[in-house]
Length: 205
Image (cartoon, rainbow, N blue to C red; front, side):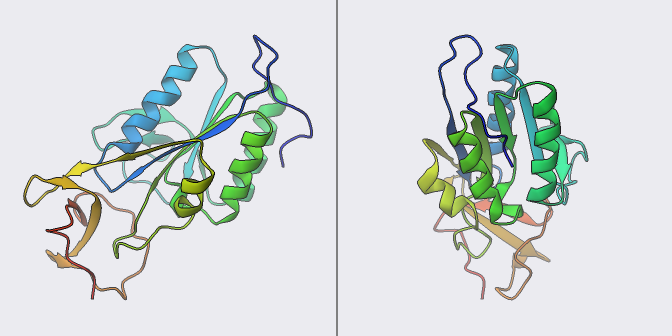
C-alpha cells in the first residue's frame, strides 16, 4: 500500500494528484499517447514509473510498446499486488511523481482502488485501456475509471473496412467475427483484430 504520507510537488511543496485515462478502441494510438505523456514528465525531471500486464508480450516483454514501435521501459506485472510491491520499493528509494499503467483492463479490479489511492496521496496516474471488449460491452476497470478520472481522452481509429472513424474493436477468427462465447481476453494485434465504425462492426453471436 502507499506509505501514509502526503506526496507533494517537490518544487512548490503543494499537494497535487489526479488520474488521466486514455481510452478508445484498438489502433487508436492510445499507447503512443501514453508514452508521449510519460516522456514529457521525464523531460521535466519528474520521477516516472510505468507498469503493464505481464500477459502483454506482443512487441516487448519489458517495455510498453505501441503498434508503430515506440517504447517506454516498464515493469511487467502479473497482479496488482505485485505492482504495489514494486511501487513501494522504488518509492522508498526516491519519491515517485508519476505512475503509468498500460492496458488497465487486463488487471484485476483492485487496480482501480490502487489508482485512486495513489491520486489521493498526490501522485499523477496516467492509464490506458480499451473502453469496450470485442462484444462491444464495457471493459472492466475502464468503466470505473471513466467516472473517477479528472481527465479522459477517448481516441478514435480509422475503420479498416470503410475509412470512417472507428470506435469499436472487431475480433476476427479466420476472417469472420468472433463468437460471443470466445474467451474475453486475447492479447494480439492486427492478426486477430480490426478497428471498425458502428456501421461496419459485426456483433458477436
